[in-house]
Amino acid sequence: MSADCSDNLLDRAFPRYTRFDPAVPVWCVTPHEGRIFHRFFDTPPISPNGRYLVAFRMPFEDRLPQPGDEGHIIVVDLHTGTEKTVATTRGWEPQLGANQQWCGDDQTLVFNDVDTDTWQPLAIKLNCVTGERTRLTGGVYHASPDGKFLLHCSLEKMRRTQSGYGVVVPDQYVPINHGLPDDDGLFITNTQTGEHRLMVSIHEAFTRCADQLQHGVDYAGGEAYGFHAKWSPDGQRILFSIRWRKADCPMKWCSLGNDTTWFNVFTLNADGSNLRCAMPAPRWKLGGHHINFYPDGQKLSANVNLNGDGLKLMRVNLDGSGFEPITTDIPGSGHPTVHPDGRHLLTDVYAHESMAYSDGTGPLRWIDTLQGTEQSILRIASLTPWQKSVNSALRLDPHPAWDRQWRYVVFNGFEGGTRRVYVADMVNLLEQTKPGITATA
Image (cartoon, rainbow, N blue to C red; front, top):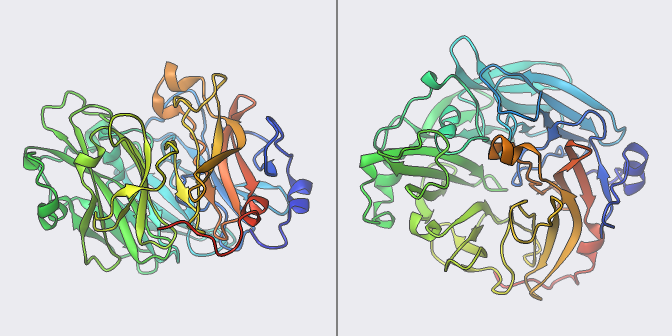
């Protein structure tokens, strides 16, 4: 957030969140209509210069979207407190919205939409000042830090392994991937020229990394689908995941959690070279989730259930070597992010995890990996009435995400019977750490 967007300015624009006595200043930056949330824990929802915040508003909260249902892209002015709908979209799901995110500057956004004539996903590049819109082939999962490139796997196929993260089109427009296809995988789009191409096919990923993927599994005899696709913070490296399941898996939609589903996470250079499997399927066999780049782009962090006794906070090199605990005494949870100081880690807690409270609230956990200690910096409600009674994809995860200056944290909460977005100022906690003290990396 820009330097002039001080706590006093936020206090003038937004109400404070004071429930459970937060250890840091917190504001609700969407206090009005509700049904609103920011994207994910790996993407700054605050614009590069710190003036604006982008979020997504659902048209309803009590059911999954059907093909053609419209959602809204919302921009909040963090100086004035005003909230503006800048676009509508038919390309969304209830976990990441339309993958709305900033595209290199404070006036350009990119998000998913669907052409309802052809039922093909696409990305919209929008200038919020002029209203100029550019349609880009394929869609977006993650934009590069400079906004010049978009990554995505097949967004319409994501529902085959997990609902909530892609776009919804009629079922007949969602092909099944038999075997290891050479025409599906990780796609990249140039936002300046519009060039769209398959960067790495699923077949190529399994072939080039065959030495890391010999697990006694006949991958060619099943179905494989791309899912997460992420840039490193410096834009030099890429991470993407492929989910595989047996061909006779009884669940053809949202099969996550079925014991026939295997996960492999790959990394590569931005030019397509140096493709490796950083996290092969056996490491996930007992459970785990939410792999993410370290701030320097040289390692990955994740929650992994190593021994069947609960999640551990782990790190691994991009080529799969150096797989080890970040901290041995503190359990993992939620969506962990390592701070650039190399010492601290921030994560949330799922409503179903043991660290959540019985009233549907949970902490944001501030972990000191050097001292082996943690602090609950605030407590927020995240349990929705519909995630158990209707569908688990209707849950609301806090998804704590840093701004680009690594001072402010944006997160979701369920307050007043609806989804809302909050901002916490972490500066005092960060200043309590003496300069020059870092954890071993």
